[in-house]
Length: 98
Image (tube, rainbow, N blue to C red):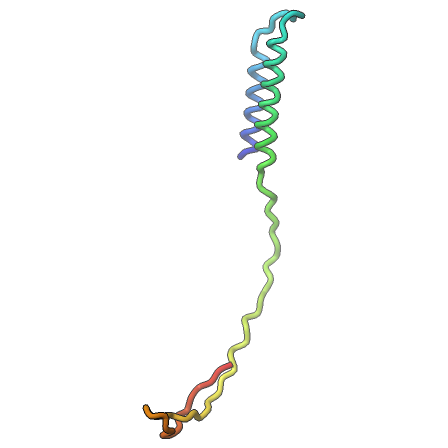
């Protein structure tokens, strides 16, 4: 979009300059030359800034299949059960996973 806008603004500026009436050149007046130089510099800066801020090209790559992780390794162990005073009162099966 920015490239299109920059190109369109350059075309409009060139068209406007082509349609303006020209007067004969005079050696004692530098005003139009300075105005043309400043206008050209401004148009170049606008067009260059629009082109410089363009996004990088999009690169498409093939998707890579990534295998899911292996399931966790689990087993059942007997773990001791303690009462509220800290004494062991028995065992209970407990599932343990890596």
